[in-house]
Amino acid sequence: MRSLLLAASILGLAACGNTTETAATNDAIVSNDMAAVDNMIADDGMNAGMGGNIATSSGAVVTVSVSGVTANSGPVLVALQSESEFGKSAGTYTTKVEPTGTSVTATLSGVPAGRYAAAVVQDTNRDGTFTIGATGPTEPYGFSGTAQSGAPAFAPAAFDVSATGGSATVALKSK
Image 1 (cartoon, rainbow, N blue to C red):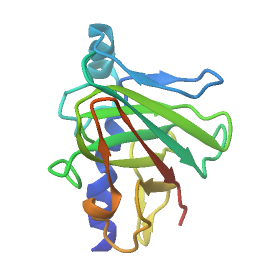
Image 2: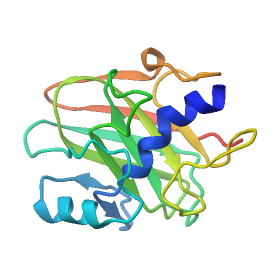
Image 3: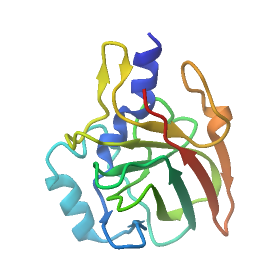
């Protein structure tokens, strides 16, 4: 049951298909570009479960720093989830970063002030989904905030985004 709740919290991360960055900076910025929307819709398997929303040009910039990444072993999928989205969808603000090192920084723009949790998975088998095996997750994953055991909860993962922005850190853990 614990694996199912974890899967529900992260499953929508497969939707992180709106922007990919492979430059040395490892930054990915979500935009309000209609081409990005068209690419998202055309991106086979990478938009299942997404609410269809992407960041707009108004709002704050949120930076999510991710450690525990395996270089060149699949994209890192990053999602900001509101409390109502947590465990139900990828979240309104998502991106993916192709890692070239053991850490990445994802930047999401146009995020309104509020309280969010960052959910992250490294898609090591590059199938566009968060893989759950018989005994739990088979791909590295993590949440912002305080380390959690058992089924993830929003409150320990939550952080505030002000009108001027916000940041979070996530340490990926493997099975």
